[in-house]
Length: 349
Ligand SMILES: [Zn+2]
Ligand SMILES: [Zn+2]
Image (cartoon, rainbow, N blue to C red; front, side, top):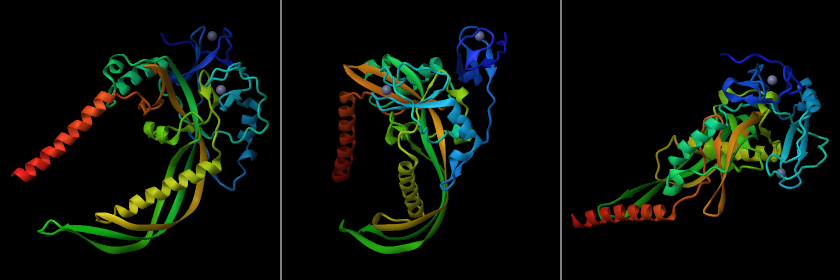
C-alpha cells in the first residue's frame, strides 16, 4: 500500500501534528506518527561563486538567515545550524546542555547538499559489511562489530574550482646498474608550461573530522549535489563550517599544486626526482559551500573509545578502527620471510 500523502506545516505533519523527518529511501519527509509522506522539491541547480562576489546579497541568503539559527556549543566548540523552529536543549554532538545565544552573523549559506542515501538501519548493515573487509581487524571484533551509537551528521565542506597555468623546472635522474653491480645516475633538466583545470576539490571544514579521515571516506559522487534545502536535514544534525573559507582555500591550493606536480611528472620517465619547482597562477577561481552526509559510529573496544566514519552516500567505511597487534606482527614477519627468501634464492642459485 503506498504511503498516504501529507502536507507539512512548520516542520510538523498538518494531518496529525507528528514530527517530520527526512527519509532517505523515499527522498521525502515522513511523519513519525501517521507514516504519511511529503515529497521534497529537489532542485538540481545551485551557484558557485567568484571570490569577489557578495554572496550575502541574494534573496536565498536572506531567506536562509530568516529561517535558521547558528549556535556555538560552549562545551565541544561545534557550530550547529538549527532550523528556527527547532529548539535544541542538547548539543547534537556532545550531548551537553546548550544554552547559548545564537550568533548574530550566521556566515555563509550552504549552496549544495548531497542528501543521505540510506537510513540508519541500512547504514548499520553497510557499516558491518564494510568494516569486516578491513585489514588487521581483531577476530573478536570482526565476528561482532560493536556499535554503541550511530549518528547521521551532515558535515560542512568547501568545494573549489580553478584553472591553473604552471611553469616548472626540474632535474630528473635515471639510474643504471653496470656489470659489476654498481649503480650510476645521470641527470637531465626539464622545464615547460602546463595548463590544467580543477573541479570540486573538496576541503572539509568540520570540527568533527580531519582531512585525512575525510579523505579515507572519499570520493563523493559530486553529480548528485542538489540545491540546499533544509528539509534534507530534518532528523539529522547539521554542522556549520568551523574552518573559514580563506583557511580552506589555502589547503585547496596546496592539493591542486600537488596534483599538478604529479600530472607533470607523469609525462616523463625517470627513476629519481632530484629537484622540482613550480610557479602556479590560478584563474577563474570559484567556490561553493557544500553539505555532505556522514555516519559517525561510536563504540568502546577493550576499554578504548573509537569513532569510525562512513560515507553517507556511498557507504564507504573510513579509517579509525582497532587493529590487532598480533596480526600486524605476523604480516611484517611474512614480508620479511618473502624478502629473505628472495635474497637466499638469489645467492644460492
Ligand atoms: Zn502525521
Ligand atoms: Zn557540543
